[in-house]
Image (cartoon, rainbow, N blue to C red; front, top):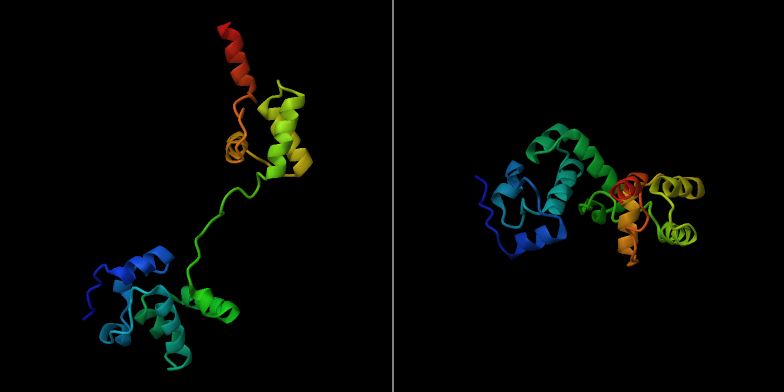
Length: 171
């Protein structure tokens, strides 16, 4: 029988560091079920033990993945990361981009300069110029967020054709 995982300081710490196992109840390995030292909530320990069980104890991969509640693909990916990076490779990484990677400070400066030179420039023309000069395709909202992020005012001053037509009709 698996021991109950009550929230405690270790669980909070694992959650904070991103290494709280999302499904500790799937671990069926005997050591995790019977020994206090082995904690199924610790994702790094689970991954390491999964690899060790195969390499040191010579347990087949199909049996190991069943005991550790995972699949062969995950096993091979984990083994490859461990071979490349060692134990740090077993620590889960946060996924996805970490901020703006296409809309750089240089592009924002270019946008501000173009707006100063041609105050009536449209978003369509500006985005086309960005594409030609920097080789990136950006959305208007991405540039607006970049302007806001770098603390520059006037992000709404570059208007679309649609906005200018609406303003003309109202006059």
